[in-house]
Length: 640
Image (tube, rainbow, N blue to C red):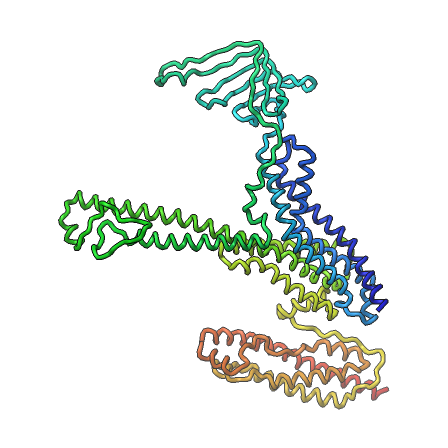
């Protein structure tokens, strides 16, 4: 027990520093990606460092749900990859400790991390998201810092366009200035040109003071009177040596009210989300009941109503000018063409109004449904993070034990690939759930189900010491899929205890060759469609031939003659029909009746039979060559 405790402490001490490092790196990377996205809202607005630091802090908290699973995956891969590469994992297994027992302390640690992640997701993240997006909104609303460039028009001051040809950065003087003043509207625009000027903020940072030297201003007087197109419009011209303009410009950073985003789903915990979902659902159901009643009355209400029908709904009362008649056809036939046209126009107008009403009500219903879906998605997110962390550990740790490769190279590549796949599937599932294509729980847990399968697969392979990551394993797997034939590979034994009885082998070889020739003649006879489905596809005969072949091979592997060993490698390996989904009688009967499918399988069987013929032709050839070499070897022994 003491040794196990020391082992557990060693594993935890190995894992924790790596996890803290990978989590920090992943958090830094995703934080930089977030800041790069919103850099335009921060740069050039004179925001204080304290405000930027606060935003970085809340942005880091916001990015924890993305960095934590990736950090756990990468840390578990590196940890167990290092243990495997240094043969420490092999030493633990040699001592009789299973992989799951080695993982036990880390499983407990990761479960504690998952519990902490759930608490963070439910209690801390909503508050941090509220603070973060309030800050982002405030930054977007803040006016930019005044940094007027040279040679281009500056449009960041509301109602003004400024052009400066050159600037004296030492004294803050601007030269050759042109100002377009649209503060009173485009109809009353003013144009001011000045030789030079200065721009500074007021003490309270609520205004800008623009001081101009040696210039002129031009202003249209069009608003004082209405003129025709050909009339000349009077204007006012003013020449000045010194002119000061006071411009309203709030340069202070003011925090937006958090109550603007308080009702969003991102700012709510589980209890608040459930309460909001119930409220939205009740409101949605009430609105649907109201709409059904309203639209029912609207669709039943016509220009000419039946006097026996009484409309008592308070939603839509009967119009005072509604005509009540018994026979519409008789009434309509008595109307003049102009009156009929008027009736049709009235009916069309009512239908247009009803269609527009239905359209706007459907928009309201769609908004309510979208609002509810967002709340349900956020509710599921409270749980998916913790489960994803646990599953990523059960993917990373066994995979690291399998690949036995430490460091930051291969584990980082595998981690990024797995995480990007998970993230892509997760975004796809969220989109399907948000658009009501899939149920909410299916879209939100789709990526988790896939992770569960991967985790179970890698854990099973690692516990059973599988060679799933070796190239030879995958090449054999692909060879089976493609249908490539296996090749024999034998070597002469250095020590032979029992030499083969060549006389018995020759007798068995002759019998085997005779049966192969007989089977080959049978294969060359093309079966009819019905006889093909009635046969057992030569399973019993093939099994007997394969057993005889392997018995001969096992006997001759004890031979000391290299040429006989080499001939054995020319033997094809007998396999049974791969394309055989018709083993049962009812499947054969179905294929006989359903001719299109039966013909397809019949053609596949024909090509399989052709391949089998070539195989047995090679076997017959090898049989004869083996028989010749064995007789030659016997003659040499007799001569000796």
